[in-house]
Image 1 (tube, rainbow, N blue to C red):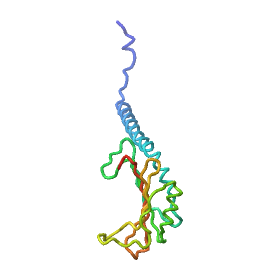
Image 2 (image 1 turned 45 degrees about the vertical axis):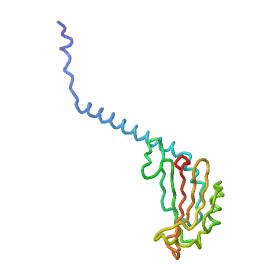
Image 3 (image 1 turned 180 degrees about the vertical axis):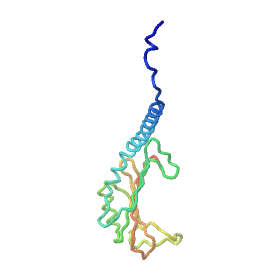
Length: 169
């Protein structure tokens, strides 16, 4: 008979240790998934955000919002993947020359529509409308800088810079 086995005290069971291990494994899996999503977003938008950074706002323009969509897990239902916009507000008058200067400093060569100041409110529009816009293609992205007005005599201007991959056309 082997008495060495029986001479050792019985091992205590520690159910809390097993539960702790399960919780740690679950947390590691969730953290890895979140890191994967974040990494795909950063890689997917790596080319687009520096292009938007080249569209520098003028002094006195206050940031009013930003939306960036991209990454391999992007589902373009409402907003197309690989696209973004930034919006600024100002009470200062914005001219077509200002928009052309911003677009040319960014390397954008394209079309300019409207004069930003005297563009009349279209007859079929009752809210915000485009007073002028510059558009073109920059490094594989359709770029558009729009000046929006709420009313003909309203001093506030909304400047929106939009980028979208040419694949979204």
